[in-house]
Length: 138
Image (cartoon, rainbow, N blue to C red; front, top):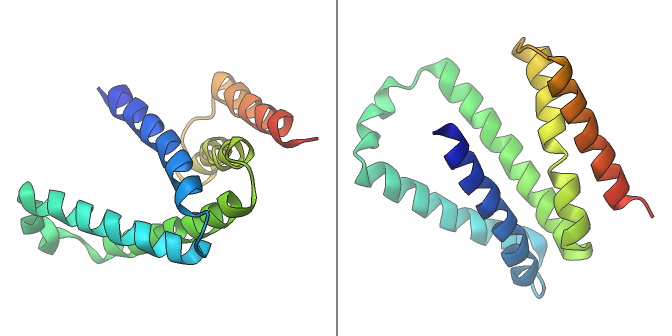
């Protein structure tokens, strides 16, 4: 079932790029990121409260919280740079470079999480990198 959610994620990520490019056209990219973040914040907390998951907040360990905060900082930085790139670049070029994160994630997961890097995974990551270069080089 994970692949269904992953496909939905990919679809909404693609839609995000198109909608963000239109939305960031007439305002500073950092303001656009802040507005988007407020919407995500409200949506995420609404889901947490609707599902009663807020009751588990006290069970979050300091270790888990630290890494979630760090992940949030990384996400914020990603969004700030993504919106700036969208503001000054073409979606058809910005989005593929952004998706280079897939290949970087594969590499970093092998280094930091000690996940297996099979030859198939390595070739896939290499093809993502090669495809990104093809799309952005003039």
